[in-house]
Length: 265
Image 1: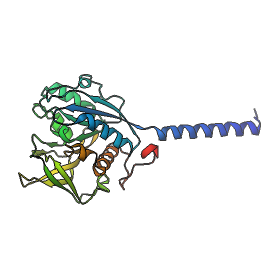
Image 2 (image 1 turned 30 degrees about the vertical axis):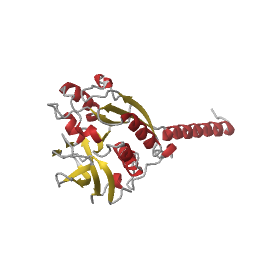
Image 3 (image 1 turned 90 degrees about the vertical axis):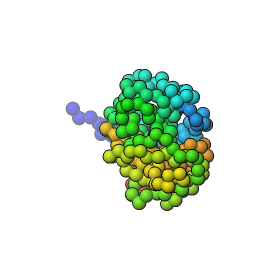
Image 4 (image 1 turned 120 degrees about the horizontal axis):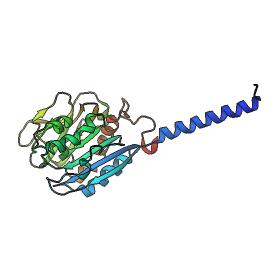
């Protein structure tokens, strides 16, 4: 059967238009991030706003936020669900629950990451769950830490390791009155990116790094005690690059890949 040329052209035009619409919709879909936060000793109420709004202004990301608890022993209720991370492209951990020690609970937190959900781990999260007998969280974080030095002005020195996460990060960054977490163990897959020398220990400590655990990429930093640190553009730029790297949407120049910049650019 021979169809009229005008009909065929219209069908072709419609198909091309539909494909363009589908491509545009796909390119503009934001990353879906989950921010897990709460616990002791930090202004998490302010920090959840600083992080979610600061990252969303720099990358095409939308956040769901779970904020619970003020004690080191609190168990975030979402973690009771084995599928707690289902549907998310990345999880940002900014939590401080150092005295939660149930191994099964901690392993349930780590399981979705080991299966492939990327993680961004900030500040006190790195030594949360530190009293448990399982190494699952420590392996996910990549650096084991159980304590930090007193608050002090820190000079953060970028290492020479070439990495897109550190593009735009200054060679030395002055970070006032932050906490230097002491490195007890560095796990095998860690790539150190920056360090600082302790005022008490006089020893260099890794403070920014990447890790791989199971199928997941992990970006982590022990920096970020004060709101002033988290709201610093240097910090927010760094964490945004770390998040994009973890999901494979950061180019070699440290820029968001097309469709993942601010507003989907």
